[in-house]
Image (cartoon, rainbow, N blue to C red; front, side):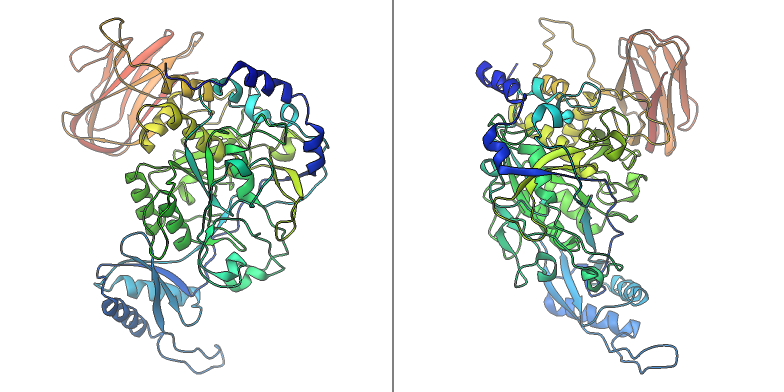
Length: 623
């Protein structure tokens, strides 16, 4: 087994260090704050920024498409005031810049358009033969906001980081560190940036880029992008964001959200200061895409591509491409995946990088919220210290796995929160003002899985792609210790770091020296596997492990979609159409096998295409 073990001296120091925080650390960390999980505001649009994918790269053709769309919609003509409407200036439009995703450009209009004007403009623009797609350039938010409250003093690893080691709700970090700490892997954190020089994190940070192009959002003096990726603050004065399309709102202090997320991934560990990070041998790279009022989708998509080492117009190439991208951001309101995002994600995956996203905090179906609405990402739900679903967490078939996000006040302080070291400034970062901040949300769950992916990539011989990583995470997930209602599925289970790394480093079965079972994709109890497709005659093998003590029936079924698939099941061996313990071969895709008294062990499930089939769901259930 390939392993990268820490020494016994270091392991002992981890346990000693967990007893309490050293005096020097206590002197430098002034106190604690907590925040309740909250949904991000509904996705905002400024009304004057759009993203357009052109077929033609010629500037003249692009300008003509904009002019024609304005003309057909009548927006280029000024209107006089009437008794029922104010005067309206005529609108012009121009291409601001091209993005890194091929064909996509940011377009601005001379004044903000109303919702009806925007819809008309986009409809006419999309109808132009030179245009593939046209969308508003939306503002997205991080998945949570910070607010101060009293909390106990003298924080330390043993008391505060339940998410690392609690037997019900934790991820088993200490045991996993015997195999990997993520050494040599870069994780990009697309967020508010990281405060430069953050205590207990700075030695694991490598510079990235501040991708925010609008000074109103970045809080820099001028528009444009700058190297570093450092968090300058995302505070908001009362109603500051109204000009950017947000509803009226009160003031808000800076969240330091990106520093908190990065800390969970790679906070310096075993150094007598602050807290620990899961993949503390890895390096985190800040990609600042969120500032005051959120971040534009066009900046976020360019941030994804730059992080993965893909060229972005006007920027130097990333000298340290990230193997893993964490995105604890998205939409508070329901929305589909923007075409710009999907194109960027496809490029990132093709480059070999993996994107891990927060499922969202709306307690809704994750399929209806960006980023989980996008294909090609690993979506993470949030659990409590009990191992049960956090009340706020999104759910559904789009959620691949769950990880600790905290139950907030429902579980009390400190066990309701995920803790890391952040700055304590209300607006800009304040030198020397470091606090322990406890936060709850799927923003906190996602970096657990991003760190886990880094730990895997650090020890495997060949890096895994996103699909292989997703399958490995699901195959090794720990069953939920608290029943998850069937109406709110939360993925394959809770992240289990020791099981994940043991399977990742397991030597392949050698049939010359041992008995090898069939190669099959493992599915989990009561977790549907959707979107399955195959050609006529195709065969796909799955497996489910049934534990001892099951008294009820094991039911295996397929449903939905189109075409015709047959279902074959055998215990402890691979079934076939001519040799199976159980089968269901009705016309269509509604197949069911029911095993009244299943024995403990492996049941193999084969889907055979009678005719081509698509969008079929497979599910196995037992009590």
